Every structure is written in C-alpha cells, then in structure tokens.
Amino acid sequence: MDYLKLLGLAAGTITSITFLPQVIQIYKTKSARDISINMLALLILGVSMWLVYGIFVKDVAIIYTNSMVLTMSLIMLYFKWRFK
Image (cartoon, rainbow, N blue to C red):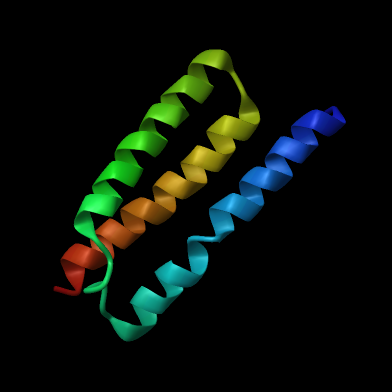
C-alpha cells in the first residue's frame, strides 16, 4: 500500500471518529433532541452518494471513510427515533 493511500485512510479515520463523541453522548444522555433531523438526512444522503462513488472508482479510502460516517449517522438517526 502506498503512502498516498495510507494518508487517505488516516484522514478518513480521523474524520470518521469525529462523530463518535456525539454518538456516545446521545447514548449516555438518552437524548438526541438537539440533533437536527434535516442535518442527519442530508448527511446520510451525501455520504451514501460518496460511498457509491467510492465503490465505482474503487477507492478504498473513500469507501472506508464514508462507510464509517454512514454507520455513525445511521446510529444517530436510530437514537433520534429511539429516544424521542
């Protein structure tokens, strides 16, 4: 694996884990009241599109990053619904 791919994977990891504290906070407080459903919907749509793009161009960093962000976003959406 070349250094450019490693850079992409490292950047993707850092970007993806920025959502982790929010997911943990929602879980701990059992409240997602302050999370905008519109923001989540747009994020899920955009990240899904990036994921499809990454699959078509066969870019591991794009696939990895957007899979992680999509997973975190879907967890937040679930919590938004679950902790109403």
